[in-house]
Amino acid sequence: MATIFSKIISGEIPACKIAENDNFIAFLDVFPLVRGHVLVVPKTEVDKIFDHSDQILSQWLVFAKPIARAIEKAFDCKRCGISVIGLEIPHAHMHLVPINSAYDLDFTRPKLTVTPEELADIQGMIIGYL
Image (cartoon, rainbow, N blue to C red; front, side, top):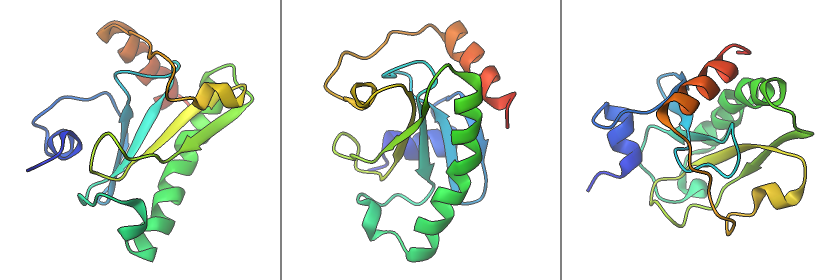
């Protein structure tokens, strides 16, 4: 059964896309920890990150790098944090999150509620720095 990420990749479910190429897609998390929280997902549906080929693993970081830099420019943060947890959806993905402390990457915290208009604004902010 296709994951929610595969449905976003195929266009069945809309998403606020930040970037895309043949192997990866990046889009805003609709339940973010903080404003600017982006998911970076390989288009190949593989559950665990280290089950991907070495080539995909290295390309993944290269794809994410300009997005992380754009996040750092778009938001008042010390850096763009990265997290790979992968328990909630069986499709490997990385979180890029603007952070000022380690607490900003605490996934047990309540998530933000953002409107579609806020998501569109955030999307524009990040894309504006790509």
